[in-house]
Image 1 (cartoon, rainbow, N blue to C red):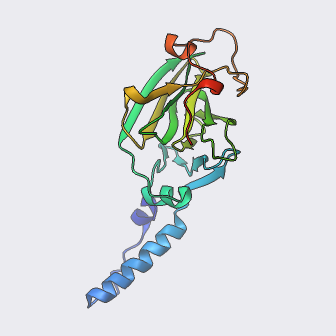
Image 2 (image 1 turned 45 degrees about the vertical axis):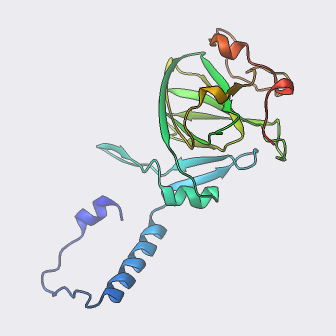
Length: 224
């Protein structure tokens, strides 16, 4: 139940409160309350993408004259939509300037699922399916993530990931399902014509030397 509703509830001092007399009755009332709460709290809308298993989470934002509040992550809701038990073990935070491309990155072992979002600015976020057994192998999808839309992009293990900054500056946050393992780091070339990503900004691109020398998909390590 939203906090403001709890605060607004009138206390009726004219009626005595009945306390549940048994543990089973307490548990039943608690279960009913949880069920009602789950129905009332539409914390996220979830959108499918053209890539198998990759999802976009759109939070329900509550705003008023004070500002806004939203639930950015809920384990139970997340696992329900993903359809699997997921544990995040590491949170990362980066800042980049306009035109910067980071990617396309992945780990060939200790593969990482990533739940990514932007808390300042705007980026064009991209995933590429590197699972040979997938119906969308070699395909890419891009979406806008910003502090305004507050969308989150779930990129499962087995994908390469990258983004380009569209605003003057952007701060990027992401959760990962496994730890950083530099010995297993791999990259795919950001402008590989076989993949054909349509980056919004093609002038004044800023890359790391490592990303600029990444192999194309044809010779990259991929997943089964």
